[in-house]
Amino acid sequence: MTPTLVIVGAGPRGTGLLERIAANAPELYAGSELDVHLVDPYPPGGGRIWREAQSPLLWMNSEAQDVTMFTDETVAMAGPVREGPTLHEWAALDGRAFTGRRRQGAYLRWVYESTVAALPPGIRVHHHARRALRVSGPPEGRQQVWLEGRPEPLLADLVVLTLGHLDAELDDEQQRLAAHARTHGLIHLPPDFTADTDLAALAPGEPVLVRGFGLAFVDLMVLLTEGRGGRYEGAEYVPSGREPVLHVGSRRGVPYHSKIGYDWTGDRPPLPRFFGPAEVDELLARPEGFDFHRDIWPLVEKELGFAHYHRLFTAHPDRTTVAWADFEEKYAAGVGPELRTLAASVVPDPADRLDLTALDRPLEEVRHTSYEELQDGLRAYIQADLTRRHDPAHSPDSAVFFGLLSVYGQLVRLGDIGSWWHGFFSYLASGPPGPRLRQMLALSRAGVLKFLGADMTVSAEDGVFRAASATVPGAFVEARALVEARLPHPTVERTRDALLRGLYADGAAATPEGLLAVDPADGRVLNGSGTPHPRRFALGPHTDARGSGAFTRPRTGGPAFRQNDATARAALTFLRAHHYAEGAVR
Image (cartoon, rainbow, N blue to C red; front, side, top):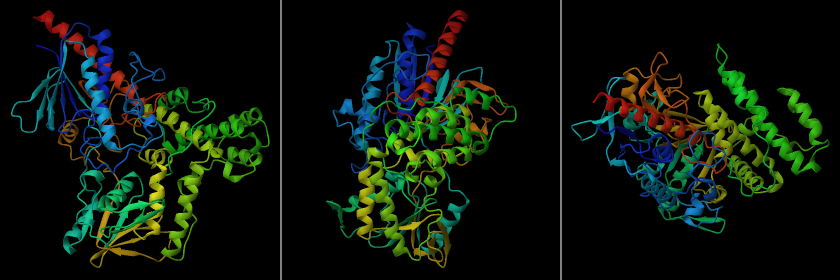
């Protein structure tokens, strides 16, 4: 029997795994046959999120030069580097362009097709445009992968789950809000992928409460404005008359920081410095375990501070009062408050000092007497952020970005560290392109977009939804529509994915945060006793080894690429040994 590998999920992560199989096969699987079955109702390459059949108004959130699906010499992996073009090289785009998601979908489709073409002759790929419903089978035998609408299962020697982002059942609060909506004829749109959400019920001119100010909100904003016929003329927005009025708030009450709008010059900070492999090894060796805020965050904070001040002292020395060598020596010896005191003593301008707490909660101490007053304050905040993030005089901000990438590469090894870090990372490092924030300002001036403030609360009472915030004490806004503008949070218990839920019910281990537990070495799924399943692997955001994305910036280490390579090599090694063992038996 020909060895068989089933990959459930044919989006960027599944495509990346297939690319690593193609790269490693000459060494580990030369001359042998293998059937690879890709299972996904969406097209291979882009999958659901990056499919080409979506609105042309939706952009990528990264510059075209910062998107690659190919490894390079910075990826710490055992397999060979197989270089390939970035998105901007492949599409002949300006590297600084924020292109549409359709274009990224086409790039991913090309990566998939070129990867299949690069496979050795004996390795064949079959795509099944169906959903996978269940995986069964003993650890010591072939697995059965049951597909929707197919009476017989696929038989697999190995199964790899590259499921990507998943839908989730409503949590308790969302269920209460949905019940209130049903009772009173209101509109409640729960967390979802905005491109898939039916927005037709949001009526023109009607107020809509929006909870969430990240990237899902940006998509919502675009689809309800330009998507309904509005247009921008210079810095102003010309409504079509079909737009609802969006009242948006969140925990922070501000949008994610703008993407940096200038090129990096000079050397990058020498990272990692204070949070690298040795520190991660020490944390993993602690028999009592570790706590993120107590044990990890101080190291992360010091690492990001090092990146910031290295850039400030070396690129902008006129804004400091001592030499970098003197500062670095004292910084290396300091901890916690000592570092803030040190920076204050040698960096005269507070705007040149790194204050992560203030960055995380910019409205913490801000209070306004009315929502009208808040609009002016938020517009000023957004404009200031745009100005700073497009001014190379503030290039320490860009150094912090590189620090965040370095930290993320280390944190992957620590497993499930909770959701706070991922939100913080996205807020600082994965915000919208500058033009999107300029559109927010235009929509605000046009009265189509209104800001609610920080620590937003939503209650269901008196037949409506009511929103309030700490930024405008005592005030509230009522509406008959509420949109949760954020991605679903699918734990293994609340996911709508039957396959993942079934694995958990059958004994697969989960973390306290509800992520599928996997072996960090190669992605094998763990059972309740911590034993890896020999024939089941999982990669991606539904696992506790989730990386920062299925594709990444060139020459930044690519944690997901490293994971893909380890899993591909483990799978090929198993399949080849299994093939020879079966041949010996026959």
